Image (cartoon, rainbow, N blue to C red; front, side):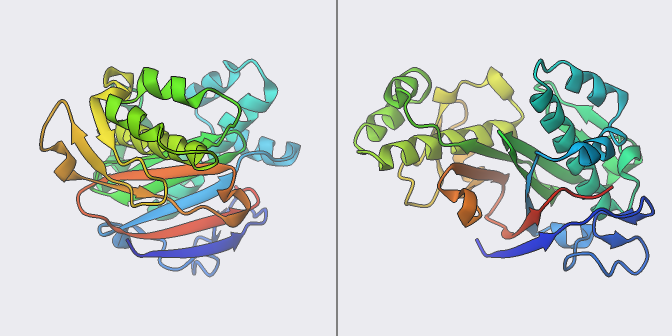
Length: 277
């Protein structure tokens, strides 16, 4: 997989502008952010969710009534704010590809809750998946291919071997037991993010158990789907990719991308600060 990384600063802008600059002329856009380039390429977007009161207010006005209701279900204010920030940034990024109003985008949800564009925008075949862990988020965007992404903070101090025995396939748990710290933690979260990314790409949610398929275990080797219990040849249909994170977060987080078809080219946009309205 080829990969290019763009570090982009973001500043508050007027409502008449997109997240990347003026709607006309588009001088503030990163290179080639458009629908045309997404057939054979995945764009990844990394961004932080925490912000000040002003950014939270800008986020809130973009949410649909349903999204605002979902945000209010979180007990802690920090979690409400992070959910709203994730949805608002999702809207801004997708709207930049669609040259649309972020607040006007509509979504429909699959049986496992995976969102897709609805209405006229559905005809663009723009696919996306968003994952977040604590204050960090990762979004993947492509056209015409199913995909899933997962981002997890590496949390030491838990009995990872016991969790693996409970949730992973026996072969994965056995292989994990062969890694000593600190590779043991890296291997566990490599397995976890690879499997979660695949579950999200399948669109199956919790209806497909984590031990129903096997992924590669070694965190230092390329990710791959090795076998499935439900369809013997399903592994041939999917590409599994470990996402290279920013050095400032790479020690604390692990991420993976699953996508239908051959490995795509990949661009990774890392955003400094909150996207503007």
